Image (tube, rainbow, N blue to C red; front, side, top):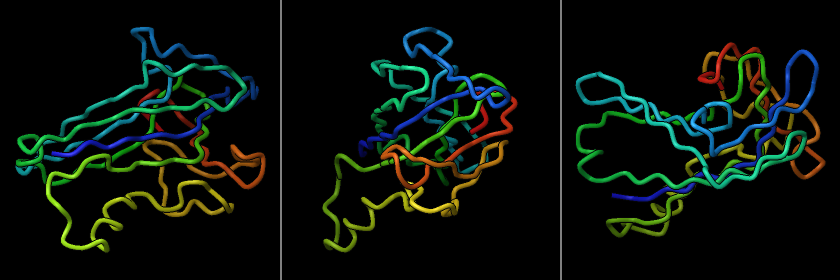
Length: 171
């Protein structure tokens, strides 16, 4: 198996008013905060969804907030999997989810890679993770539209923006 860490900077605001949204990741209504959604496609074509949240995240409306979570994939879990699609969702209906500096990296490897080239490929799971230009860089929405907005986390460049969201499960 292997362990993966996801981290990113996030904001939530109301699409109509631009007002920042507060969320509390410790509440049972975890879907009101950003979270990782994994769609696991099993070898027989059935799908299962796994959601991971950052229970320790400190959220402040109108500011960039840091999300950190670790996901473990066991060999048994992966033995019947055809594919896994990752997405970032969460936040109330009508909210805009803004993301920047997205990093999804492997923490442990069960087998040694064949070469350092293989290891490098394995650790570069995401490209275009910081929205440094106005282009979406291959990102797409899950039931929403995706674009960019300025400024990004570093107060320059851009951040990804998921909007026209009808529910927390869209991102």
